[in-house]
Image 1 (cartoon, one colour):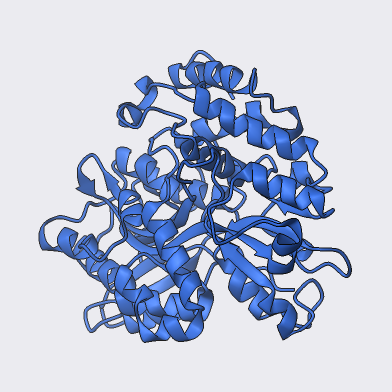
Image 2 (tube, rainbow, N blue to C red; image 1 turned 135 degrees about the vertical axis):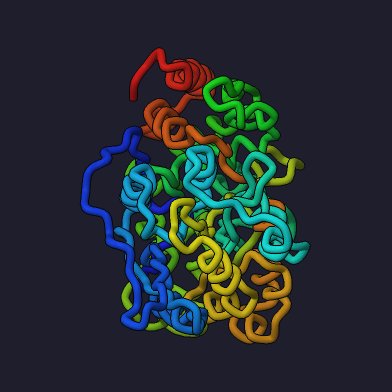
Length: 440
């Protein structure tokens, strides 16, 4: 079965220091004197991104794709090396939203201003996506595509367990339902960024935050709030799954891809699974393949619902991921690069990415388009759109890499999580990291 990677938090064990070594790409220019804009992309959706680079090139400039490493950590490090050295050939870059505050705070992104800012961030952009590209009251990147997580499940499994999926469900209910049928719950709990995504969503779903949102832009002086009732509720969910019969055998090393095959095992009831939007295209394109649905009838048994509630009656906070387009502050062609960024994030471009690559839009109008309605079930499109619009971002901090690593170090392995101790221990360590009193 094909596994399409996600550019939300794919295997992001974030580095904590930069090595300003390495050879920088020399600025390119066409043979006719026309400048070439270098666009650094992550590996997701390469075919469509190559076409967008061609389509958005003009008589004034060409856009050339430069491929970043597969690991989000390595993507960040390579771009940071270039920008910290003032590299003028880094014109456009595909950025995971968690990198935006760090890069903007360092002065590495050229903000969009005036009419361009209004065009990049108009009323058509979903709220969850809009939050990821703003820093210090400026629009510092352009939303290209958005990622979010939903609850995927076998309809027959939920029915056998007596779980009404037409109503909001809690993590506790999902875990109990899976355990009652000798089924499993698929999550991302390896020691990497996606585990922090889960922790963050659980905390926000209980009404809390890792850092106080009103102080998060204070950097090292931000108020740490993970040791709270919400933090304890999040830890209780992880502990419950760890202690249940529904945890998958690779629970402590699980990632986005490892649980996919559990939905359609050779025998058994299947699973419930929280995972990104790529799942639908992955399964729909794998009918009859190993690990995929054995036939169309089995694919019809695939269900989806909003991300589970941490606390019954409290709205869940689906994770937000995706890709934003930043313009390098040291580019020799900033005006052209910003013009190109508008083109490659347009509604037409987002439609191509969604239909061809399964990378969902950040614009409301694209979800309403005939092209997407033909490519995806209407209720799934509505679920994705609402999840992006109402989802919860990770802390918007210039020190996010340290924050993420600090949490991973105290919440992993998930089998050790205890609501009575883990939130407190992680809060103490996170304060020490932010204040410079401890090292990762």
